[in-house]
Image (tube, rainbow, N blue to C red; front, side, top):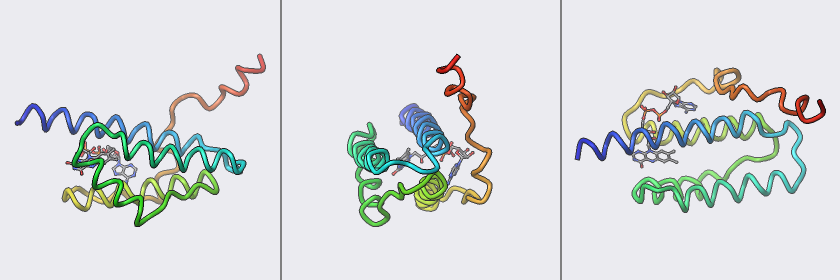
Amino acid sequence: KLGNETLKEELGRAAWKVLHTTMARFPDKPTPDESEALNQYMFLFARLYPCGECAQHFQKLLKKYPPQTSSRSSAAAWACFVHNQVNERKGKPIFDCANIGDFYDCGCADDEKEAIA
Ligand code: FAD
């Protein structure tokens, strides 16, 4: 049981890292197609998330709080908010979403430049 909890927590940390980093790299001014891609990605992510209890709960959260995909800042704020909903449910500290700006840096900020070079 203890081992399973540890694995579930590791999976959660890795998944949140991917999610928040995705938001931090989402376009400031996305095309309608990019916004729709993020919207579908979130619903599929919730559906396929490999922890049944978490997936069920997260799907309910998405219904209540639909993904905000009109800009990078709204997507990042939305992901921070839903993560805080999970934090609250688990009795974990609430993250200050005002500090989300520089927190998720994947080190890939200049991949556009590399693509040109
Ligand atoms: P995590 O919550 O994993 O957070 C990792 C780091 O992200 C933190 O250390 C902090 O630096 C930062 N962070 C914290 N809050 C925020 C925020 N609001 N915005 C941005 N960054 C933040 N576990 C369950 O037991 N039951 C569930 O129903 C459940 N549902 C989940 C649903 C999803 C979609 C995901 C991705 C995970 C879920 N988990 C669930 C796992 C759980 O959320 C944690 O990942 C796990 O318990 C490990 O917690 P942690 O304290 O290491 O920090």
